[in-house]
Every structure is written in structure tokens, then in C-alpha cells.
Amino acid sequence: MDLQLYDHLASQNAMMAIEKLGGMFAKSGLLGVQTEAQGAVLAMTCIAERISPLEFARTYHIIEGKPSMRADAMQSRFCQAGGRVKWLRYDDTEARAVFSYDGNDCEMAFSLDDAKRAGLVRPNSGWTKHPDAMLRARLVSKAVRMLCPSVNAGVYTPEEVQDFERPVAATVVNDTTYIGVVDPEPVASSEETMTAFITKMQTLGEAQLAAATMIFRELKWIDESQSCAEISDAHKQRTVDGWAKFVAKVDRRAKEIGNA
Image: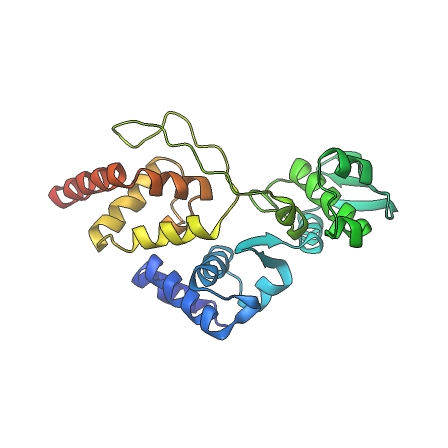
């Protein structure tokens, strides 16, 4: 895919671009996408990462509608960023390695006992079928998240996603300005949150969308190079839950822009 297509679509309307690409992915069944909401997740990730769907397939899995980074891709990006990994042990009982990055050498391990204490080992799960692979994936994610979080910030491996019990809804601060005192707690990405956010944003006109983008940037939820679609899942949930107040703020800002 010519990545300039992303720029062409996004220049028209970010949400329309996501909807259009998501619909195409859903109709094609690409990468196991079955619904337009799942297609939107794939589209948003491709646009944000500026990668083709084939590159997405090499880097991510879609697990229950959630994009998750493959452990080997996570390790590859860590090494590309200057990190090094020296494996000391990787069997059905424990994964252990020395991770080196930015002058730090850390020997870290993740064992089957660790997984059992965390309640991860369940009958007929990957932990009983392929414990060695699950242990390596958990260790890579744990180490990279600590030493070089820019590689996998906010993204989990398929093995971790499968261990999530259920998404946790973000708590909305009851205020009249929409701007919270603190950021909401992180939530596991969910198809329902993504669908609700896209549906709500599609009701905004062009001036409202411009105002919404400005508000998100003022809140530091996105930077100047990002679109509304790239706010975090917790912020998407907060926006949906406080939609009436958010729209009121958007309308005020749109009016201010129009009178400027």
C-alpha cells in the first residue's frame, strides 16, 4: 500500500478516513478482521504507525478486537533502538535473560511460579500448552517496558491480552468544564470503547472537529502531529462518558474560533 494514501484520506477527515479504511478491512477479512469496529482499530494503528497492513501483520495481532504487539516484534524494536538481549534460560519453567540498554545491564526472569502467583495459569490456556513461549513473551514485555518504554508504551503482547480478565471502565470526574484534575486510569482497549468513540465523533461537524482537536492538544492528550483518533483508550472512554459536557465545550471553542 502507498502510505501517501493515509495523508490523502486524513487530510479530508480523520474519522472518515478511519471509517473508510476500517470498512475496507472488514469487507476483505484482512488479518481476521470481522467487524467494522475491528477494522477501525486496524486502520487507526496503521495510520498512527504509518505502516502498511502487511507490516501490521508482521508486528501486531488483533486479539478480541485489540491490537497487540508480537513479542518478537517488541524485541526487534528494542534491538533497533540500541538494546541487546542475552538469553540465559528459556524452557517450560523459566525464561531468564540479560537486557542491556543505555548503559544498563539488567538480568531479569519470569517463571512459571510467577505466572501461577499472578493467577495466569488456567486449564487449556497457552500457559498449559506452550509455557516456554508464554514465559519468553512475558519476560520481553516486562523488560522492554522497564528499560525502553517508548517501544511498547500502552501496547501489550497477545499473551498478555489473552490474560486480561475484562476491560475496566474509566472513572469520569464529575466537573462542569470537562477538563479533569488528573488523567483517568489506563484501561484495556476494547471494541466497545472504540466503536462508541468513533460513532460519537462522527456526529461532529468540521468546525466542531477542529475545536475538538484543539481541546485534546491543550489537554496534552495528543501533540501537534496527531489527530483526535490517537488519544488514549482511557481518554476515549472519558470523552464518551462525558459527551454532553464535551460537546458543550467544543461548541464554545468553535464559536471562539469563528469570532477570532
